[in-house]
Each structure stands twice: as structure tokens, then as C-alpha cells.
Length: 339
Length: 86
Image (cartoon, rainbow over all chains, first blue to last red; front, side):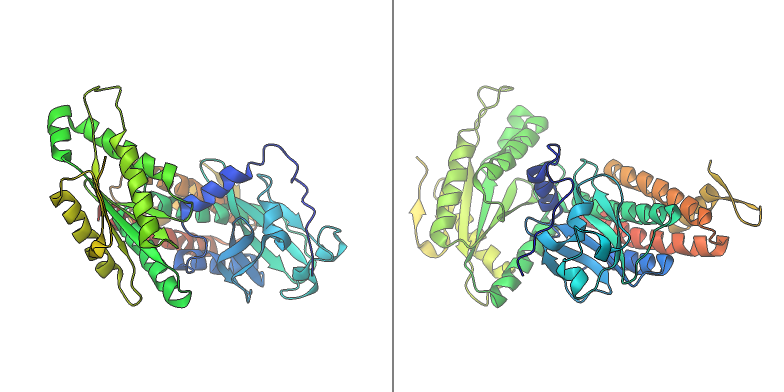
């Protein structure tokens, strides 16, 4: 069925879909497994408001993903049929008392078929940066008018969901460099490796370590050392693709997981980052220069993350041994020395 | 301080109910960023308590809902705080 919603707020210039999508990406939750904190909240909402269906829905580019739901048989739907896509377009509750009488939804497949939505109340999940990443919604299979108290109750529960999402973001990011923390990076890359078992794809890991970082701290002070770390991590974003995963493993050591990337592509991307780091300049200290050494390893089917990291780490060690500021690919497939 | 009339004309203090629940969770000392989230969480619980009382829910039911709502957050918080320290 070729069905497209007419969106009331679609034409509003202030609806910044690109920024909103980036806010969703920063949460690192779309497409991942359901989690108990969200499930506890939907259970509580369902009981408190006495509704058959409740969901925490996040809106991605073209899908809505249910982070938790009760009364729904699916984990996602196309975005263009999602009631929640309407809810995120204004910072106010979105209410449909009877979908069959609403021209926007009367022919919606979610109304005509499972889960047979008749009434809907959705509260946008507004993050502190102002972006609406999804909604907390309740659905009934009967026409229903939602009272102001019910709306206020659902708004409070939506704030609980937002708080949980905030906690996740804070905990998963490295506070200094704004890339993933070691734990979050490991969890996310582990999930990607699991995914390659179901949907075979190449995957490479780049490990990098800033050269002579202790000397930078000793000679220019720790605040400059921190600045070098921040500027280094900022360079990743200029080279990596949206779905690549960068993290700080600790100290001056970073790791990047490249999805759908062969060893050759890993080498190319690592080399581009290496060049950018070597070209960094600091207005605070004209003399300060920095560089990094890189190890690249590509996943062999059946390998664990620990094994993959060990290969990348050995390649990184080899890059250091051969003079630093260079990229070394594991298994001696290829070697590139910095200019 | 938020005071809301119950149907029986008793006064139930939403703020007291929230403090009662949050005290029992014992969040302890946490980084400033997380404390900001906790402050918003307290306000959310206060809003929830107020809305539930206005909807005519009894004190016991309100406390039970607040406890469950806060329990979820508390578990998440503990996990996240531990993650931050790792």
C-alpha cells in the first residue's frame, strides 16, 4: 500500500530535521535491543492510564523504532505511517480522539489493520538541546477523549523517559573528547560484530595512540594535553561516515570501528585521519605539533572483539616501533609511512 | 510548595510525597551533569504527583506509582554512574 501521511507541521521552517536526526544519532539507541528502564515506564503508564497499548517510540530517518512497548506486535514501522511522526512536530501533546474520523489517519494501515488504532495521545520526547527525538504514546482501540489530568500524567512520564535518555548519553560519552567512552564503544562494537554473524559484512577497527603525549603534557601543560585530545577527536568527525563508531579507550588511545570497511578502506581512512592530526596547529602554542600512530585490523568471521583489538594493537605497536606517525595494517598486508 | 485538594478535602503535599520517595532511593554524590538530570527528575516526580492527585488518585496509589517511576530511574542511575567511573 502506498500510503503517505499529511503532516500538519511539515512545512514549518523551524522544524530542523537534520539537527533532529543528529540528536537521535547521539543517543545511540536506534535499532538496539529493548531496555528494562523503558519497559518499566511503559508498564507503569499502561496501568496508570488504563490503556491497552503504550510505547516509547524514537523516530529515525525513515522508521519509528519502539524502544519499549506493550500491546504492539512489531518493533518498528515505516515513519510515513507513524502517528508519532506527527507528535514530534510540535512541543505539545498530539491527540487523536477517533482516527477513523480524522482525514489524516482514516486510511492509515495502523488504523485499518493491526493494531487498529482508534485514539492516540503522544507526548514528544524533548531533549535538553530542544530536539524532539520521539514520543511516549498511549493508544486505545476505542474512541477516547483524554482528560487534562491524563495528559499531564503522560507528560510527566515522558519527562522520565527523557531523563533516562539523558543519563544514557552522559554515561556513554567521554566527557573530554565527546566520543564514546570505552565501555559504550565496546558494547556498541560488540553488537556490530554480532550483527555481522547474521548479516555478513566487512568490519575494520582502527586503533590510534598520540605520539609522545607525555611530552606534550610535560612541556605545554595538562590543559594543552586535553586540548590536543579534544582536537584529535574532533578530526574524526571530519573523516568518518555517520555509522562509524569512535571511542576513547583511555588516556591518549582511541579506537574507531569502520562498518562495511575492508582493510584497504580502513587503511585509507586511518591515513586521512593521521594526516589531519599531523596538520593540527594551536594558536595557544605555535611550536606545538602532534602526531599519532595507527593500527588497522579487519574482522575475520568468528573472531571476537578482543581478538580483533589485539590484532589492531599489535599493528599499532609495530607502527610505533617503525618510527611513529604512520599507519600499520595487521598481518603485514600493507604498510604506509607518513610523509 | 505544591498543595492540591483531594476529593475528601484533605491536603496532600505532592512535594512531601516526592521527598519521601527520593530520600528512600539515596542517590548519593554524583558528577554535576548527573545532578542536573536528578534535579529535573525530582521536578518531574513532583509534576507527576500533582497530576495524579488532581486526577483523584489516593495517596497510597500516588506513592506506589512514584516509587515505581523512581525505582526505574534509580536503577538506571546506578548503572550509569558505575559506567562513568569505569
